[in-house]
Image (tube, rainbow, N blue to C red; front, side, top):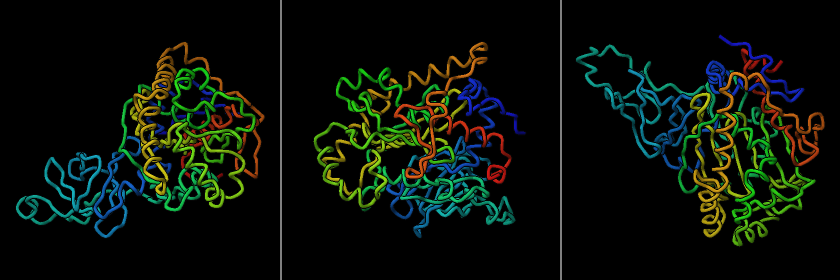
Length: 424
């Protein structure tokens, strides 16, 4: 049953109820209305390059197994045995021709077929139709520039339509050179005692907190000093469907302060401009969020992270470091180290953010605190659609226009009974 969430988000006035961050019934509705319907990021091609390679992940709180079968075709299934519902594959990643459940030994091939049932002849009398008990596939599976996404909703729009104008902004992070990007250095995973929306909105467009939360980290040389310098040409942009991105101005240095990285960026400028076109002259990508829970950061640390919901007050962060596949080894090493030192779970920036998000979530437990909405009014009414950028764009570097777009989409999805309702 869909609960009436009208009034919890007022994007026109820039107000969001504290209840959306803490109440269990709203969280359960999110799992149904958002995570079971939207396109969600699974993994990157570089994590499953060979036949038989697999990667275990989550879509909301549903475990999912992404596997490149023995013929090279990529599939995504519920990582759940059809017999008693035990989690089938316990490994984070690897290579396998088949998967066997630890409970009763049901075995599935890497294309999802049920291939082995212990005592099929004796106990089942050969009457179990194995064709009816294969792994449950996602409703739709597709990739963009090597990023694999899936949705459980067969009626969801195609991935490219779902991304819309955000696709070009993804190119500024992931398609700067021939060969695209690759993930390096494994996966950092940690639990944060906060609601998943706080980190998602932070990466969507919050440059406002850096002076206060991260100034000491900036002053130690961890990178990102551009974030505390005036930048009248920086912009927050909402390309639609709840997606968001932040750009620094075209003249603002916005790369990690590593000599090898700076020299590399200068060297590839002509190639970058050829691939991305004249729009890239408008600014430099800093961060963004693909609605609902995929976020990207480029300058201080090139990290891609997924905010896996684990309850109204708990989020599991999965963080990956990405690099241009064509980058030289010394550049890849510098980026990998920055990923751990700056935005890893113990990084100089990351600890500040986790503390903030935890505090914002915890205070929402208060009965009186929940009576008062949060303010998302920065730049209210000053954002306009910029056809050159293909996005609703703020008039200044600091704005909460992207936040309003994020929560407007959240409210639309929470209220709609189908994608057809959203289209109207």
